[in-house]
Image: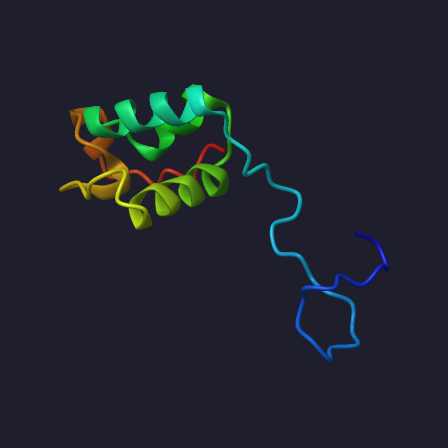
Length: 97
């Protein structure tokens, strides 16, 4: 984006915009989305999803929020930790990233 001003960003603002998480990849193809939904329903943890799709925790977490807000995935008892025994261990999924 550089120093060009965008027409659609906050009218009257003269400063340069800051784009949060610009370095992350939030693009997912339809095959990945279908597989993600299936794995989520099967209880895959955030860490397992990160490994499967070779993505970092922020990219997967944003997809989880997106799919949840659109009603495409359901809440789970253990949330991001999934449903399998390994996933429920008390570990922080963002460690070892």
